[in-house]
Image 1 (cartoon, rainbow, N blue to C red):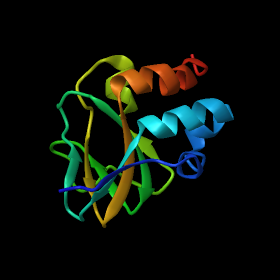
Image 2 (cartoon, rainbow, N blue to C red):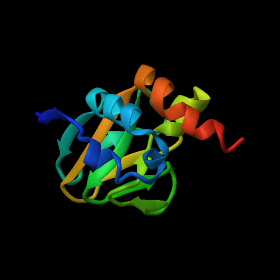
Image 3 (tube, helix red, strand yellow):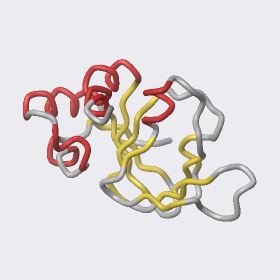
Image 4 (cartoon, rainbow, N blue to C red):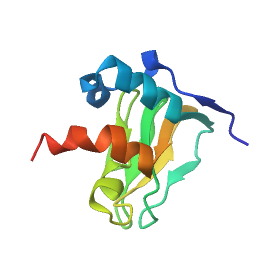
Length: 125
């Protein structure tokens, strides 16, 4: 069973995307993000599944892969994030993410993503 704790402001400020948030907002986001320890080899999100959470990698390596692909499409490292496409576009998960090594992730639900993280993507349009 994963051990859950809230993420810290220090952890979140090391995620490139989240560095754009003002201090007060990153503090509120930290209180709404749960940290989980994921064993090596464990799937985190399945391709085609419903997007319910946004994730930020804190420790370890994660493989991003697609059905029918040979090997990982890319590897995520601490400071990377995933899960935003399904939430931002309201589509099923576009890839599977699996822990390659013992991993720590911080995640938040859709409401928290919509309030704090989604506006960071709006600037790109």
